[in-house]
Length: 214
Image (tube, rainbow, N blue to C red):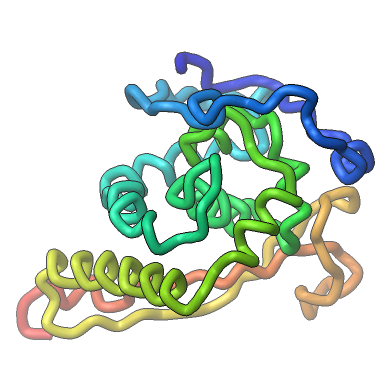
């Protein structure tokens, strides 16, 4: 992987819904991919894919060894040729990209950075992803919750903080009139302007970790 920029052609959603079975069954090895190194970051005004920021998130995910943690609980996740650990990362990528339904995976198909983030050679159809999600039972959900709790606990322990305060808030991000998913009414001063309203959380007591006597 040496390319960080390029124009992404989104999948035809209508055709994706009507897609029939493949004439030839793909090998499992063709569905997955290895990540051999870091991509070279380059900041440009044009030519970037829509989800270039996933590379930075992917580096953080690999630093946490989230894929390794998911691989260790793969036996209790629903089975799939794509791998339950990789499909779990795909669901995470959908949430980061702002998808609201499983079928929105069709809009991400063909994006090389989404595939790299998930460790997949190609993304599944929404039918495949939906069947995998329906296969979850209480054991699989519990295992994912334990992975989340363990990762959060490790981060808090490494921080060395005696007290942790999280500031959860939302901020209005105004967009153009043709941006998908933007809604009007978030900005009380400009109610007719389409906007996003992302909810973010920040560690709010970093000064206590830096200065003494707080």
